[in-house]
Structure formats: structure tokens, C-alpha cells
Length: 351
Ligand SMILES: O=P(O)(O)OC[C@H]1O[C@H](O[C@H]2O[C@H](CO)[C@@H](O)[C@H](O)[C@H]2O)[C@H](O)[C@@H](O)[C@@H]1O
Image 1 (cartoon, rainbow, N blue to C red):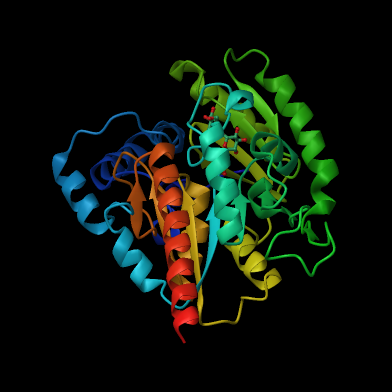
Image 2 (cartoon, rainbow, N blue to C red):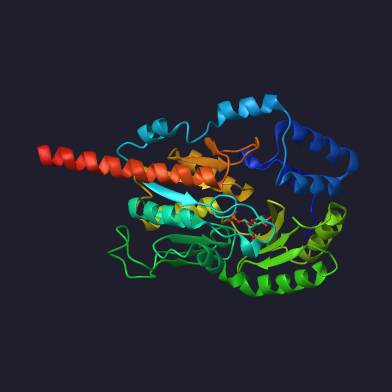
């Protein structure tokens, strides 16, 4: 897939705050783009995809003002949700499980699993991930959740009945808007595996409707070779597109479908799409989650929470620093629900 300069710029500063590069860092990236051309720009963007440090306290302060901690703002958030149906959308890597070097070992803690189980008893809950749906299911192992794998290209409803799907037949909800891409994705996966063999540390992961090329463990000196190889394959597949996540290049079908669309589809499946009283909360850490954050802003419903220790450009309203804080937030939601149910039943008993 040939890439023009403006496309590279667009990847560095995705639409509507989809980028993950701090303001000061971004301007230096733009300078680099102009001086060194598109290869360096792409490499800068790869470097910025998963920052490990941050130094400018000025940006840090403005970040906290504009994206306060969802834990600190818990009461205000709950006040805003009053009388509305909360629906939970959760990304997996970096949100429910900590980022680790080996993608096959990104396990979720047992306490996170218990929290999710309780959460799903209180609110409809979906996992929305770039991973293959079955792989993420093996990590989460909760049949009462909705799963949207491959960036929302592979959606499946709960297989265990819960309060929210008891009227539906198990496994009725299945949606795969890009099934015609399966053979192409298989082909590209094979080619990528071959091309990545000489690059130590690279990992090619088959995510069913998408492919991930990981460079977290690749020496930075080899990044441009890796990017070059990926692009040389993709130029023969104009129906695929290249996006970036945290130290990962993602190859996806070039169709108008993303995590935001998946969120909308799931709300529709729950019969909540046209309700004014729905309050979706989306928690995620990666660039692809921005599509969902933006969707919530556009709908004027609920809000997004970005999981990040570092200031990033985002359409999310609040922040949490890491998966442990996500778990605290989810536990508080469960407690809040219990208390509000108890006080409602007390009111009913008194009337
Ligand atoms: O949408 P997500 O659930 O966030 O999936 C995006 C990618 O997540 C995984 O990679 C990331 O986590 C790995 C394990 O912690 C880490 O090694 C890697 O550097 C991260 O990018 C997953 O393996 C990818 O396939 C997903 O595309």
C-alpha cells in the first residue's frame, strides 16, 4: 500500500484527537517529517505509540485539568448517569490486563475476572478489542459478556444467559461484517510471517480479521526495515489498511468499521440505540479506542475514559492510570449499583 506524505501525517495526528502524541512531541515529529521525509515520520510515530516516560510538567497539568481521574470524579460521573441505563464497553490489552512483552501471556488477574463477573450482573458489559475474539475469550473466560474481536469485525453475544439476554436464544448475536476478507488476511499473515523471520523479536499475530505485527521487542535500529517490509506487502493489497497501536502495526480490512461502529451496533442489539436514557461508558488505552470515544462524543451520551499514565491527545473525557485503577473504578461501579438498588427497594417498601 503506497503511502503519501499526507497519509503519514494523518497517522501522526489522527482525526478528532485520535493521536497519542503529546502536543510538544507532536510538533517535533512534524518537523522531522518535513526534514527527513516520510520514513522517519513513520518511525517517530511507531516510537510514540507506547511512551515510557514523560517530562514536561506543563502538559501534565493541563492533561489532568482536561482529563481528570475517573476515580476522583466518581460521584459527579454517577450523578450524570442518574436515571439512565449504564452500558459498559472495555478494551482488553492495557485496560483489563497490563501490557507485557509476549502477547500470548497478557493474562488478566483473577481479581479483575471476579470484578468483571460482578460488573456484568449489574450492567450489560462488552469487551471490545483488536485481538481475535476467541483468544480474548480464553483470557477472560466469562460467557455472560459480549465480545467484539478484531476491532469490532467479529461480534458475539453472551452464551450464558444473564438479566440482559434471558429472552434471547444463546449465541443468537453473531456479526462479522468483513468475512470476505478472511482468505486475504490469511495470505497476508503468511507473507508477514516469512518477511519477519530475519527480524529478531518481531511477532506476527493472527487476529482472524486483522493481523498484528509486534515490534515491542525489536531493536529500534530494525524498526524501519520492519515497517518497510510490512508496507511492501501491503502495497499489493489496496483493500487493506495499516494502523498503529502500542508498539504494534495492525493490518485491517479497509472498510468503514471500527470500535465506534461496534459500540453503536452493540447498543442497537441491546435495543438501546434510540434511547435518550442510555449511558455508555467506554474504557480503553489505545489509538483504536479513540473511534469509540469519538462516537460517544458525537452521540452526546456517556463518555470515554483513557487509560494512560502520560498525557495524550484524546476524545476521552476522563483518565485512569493503569489496569489496577480500572479495576478500582469497576468495583466502585458495582458497589454504587448495589447501594442504589438497596435504597430503591427501601423506598418501594415504604410506599
Ligand atoms: O484493542 P486491544 O485489546 O488493546 O488490542 C490491541 C493489540 O493488543 C495486543 O497488543 C498489545 O498488548 C500486548 C500484550 O500486553 C503487547 O505485547 C503489545 O505491545 C501491545 O500492542 C494484541 O497482542 C494485539 O494483537 C492487538 O492488536
